[in-house]
Image (tube, rainbow, N blue to C red; front, side, top):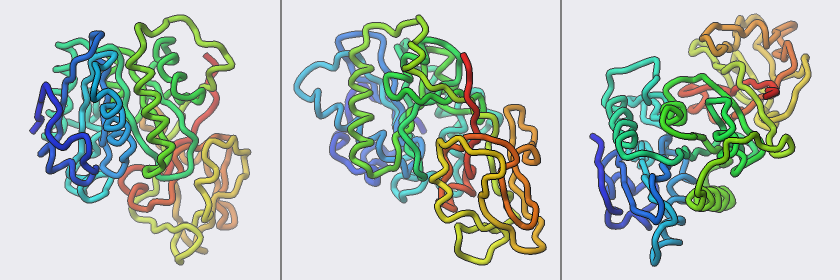
Length: 334
């Protein structure tokens, strides 16, 4: 299933994300030489509707089309089938960012592909790992790390001073590569925004020019660190909407405006249909359901039970069903 190449396939530089299935034929790992070794690793299109990753890589390679890359570059292009249909993932597929080594599940062809990618890069050596993503809701550009490590912080703050530390969900690309090298995920706002592509391009180019990654602590003013304390899901049995249809849960129509805002206890998030027993689930880092600690439902009003900061709130109902409603965060003091 995994295709490995030592050169760019024909038409790679100019193909649209929806055409990448035709160019590559499946998940592909592409190794390109550069002036320094080992390679910078970049993953793209782990979610087929998040195009900034591929477009930034294409722009980067166009920039160096007539000269050597500053550092060797290994590119993994993931879910080209979902990209063909403009979906995060197809219904028959697992999430391509939940099946890397360390995942709580196993046994699918996609698990085998990700294991092959990690093994290949472990053999070759890898300088740093960058996983590029988009959000479907309104979020600032920010970076994520899976370890409290100054090298990881420096790699993250090169992209944004806003950094999120998380340990769940498991099976994500950045967590698998954290065993090999400094590793980050960068969240580049909404797909289709040219500024997102430009920011990702500048970041990848800066990473290619790094001779080393410092291991001293970053300056306090350069790092605003948050820790994910829970992931919030809507149980399948409850219908929901955003300020419109008559559903069991009706969220505020502009709910994603709460992203990266420190919200007080009592903040309203929506309403329940009278008589409904609809509830939100919230799972902590241990997988324990702790929704009662974060939400109240008095008088059919859905409110926060404690002060938190949400991230990745989205109005995309398909994404909510396939992944989650949001994550809840608190400030983290290193």
